[in-house]
View 1 (cartoon, rainbow, N blue to C red):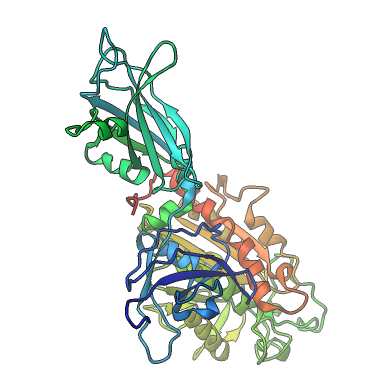
View 2: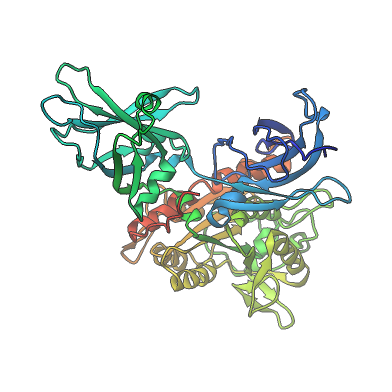
Length: 545
């Protein structure tokens, strides 16, 4: 953008609050002069929530004036991403084209995400030294090391001292452990300064020299020895032929981790999302649809034959149906699907989602199905993205007949079968069941959940409509672990929420979806971790970038 030089770029990060359309500035990188390929040093530290859609906007400007206002700078382009997209991308690296300048290619932006909560990691390392300066008059030196962590203001804080090794210029210190947060506060690039001293009994220890490194550099010693020159600045200034005051070698470096959800995602674990939607007649029953007698809905009991009759009020095109979507507003089913799916899709590389319906009569022969593909493709039930699932769902509403009974077990067993094929931690399945809560095969569903609890999968049940959902609460298993025929579920894998609890009073659908997703997805990371821990599966470790 500059006439006589290249651009002087800066990146401004904007964040969007959950359920809000307003963008707020979060921070800015430093300005890098005269370059079209800047590599920014300044990092943005964000709180990460798997269960929330955290939208980010990166605006790139050429700084052309001393004003702090971006309105006075040249706009170079922008990129919109969700934080989950960056974390869910391979090795936490996402490249996105910059847009926003009509008719012009604006270049690309490369985003890297790194979890600072690996400050819970514990490092074990061992060092030795060779040919250190002799400091004692009647003997050799008594060396020890002092580690300092750098602070944001440029100062240093002591974080570790080794033991003293007496009377040697070639000490080998014992291995020691230190939390990553103490060494670098979770910032892999933060400077770690190490001083070498000769111990004196009176406490006036003699300075031998120093060297600097970082956690990122130290971690490379996992595959090779790293040798550092120990330098004494005062001696270096005084002596022209000064080389060093010895060397320190990092002999070993290992990290033990309390693994996090992000560790597994960055290590390549894919979340496979499957949808199952309730197409039973109870989604549109009126109060007089069973032989003219009032019917109390949603207690989790098996429905009678009369409940399978279809009345006009139950038609999806009628406002009384739970599947009804007006021209101005999505149905509760569609809202629940979008709320959960739009977050999970960031962690699925191919964005292809199997989607099923259950409890409907299918054309042309009216056969009842408890597991039919919404896209009408038995060989490949996957839909392209959440929008593809929605499109297939709406198309199915126009072609099938809402009927019954409501059986959960077939679709749970279908996903469990897929989960059982890959159990090494590289795949984790999430099944979303959206239902009105009236269930016909409670015993079979419990059996299916107990079996699925030993597999890499979770089940989310979203209840729509006015039912009391007692059966769904029982399947949730928060208070009493689900059991079947004397067997208990290995893990708690079911999360149930009633959609009505998240509906915004003002009618704000975006806010309703954000609230629902936050609660319904909150348990997924812990459920994934519980599976990995019980199977002793460690994430494939991505080397620090």
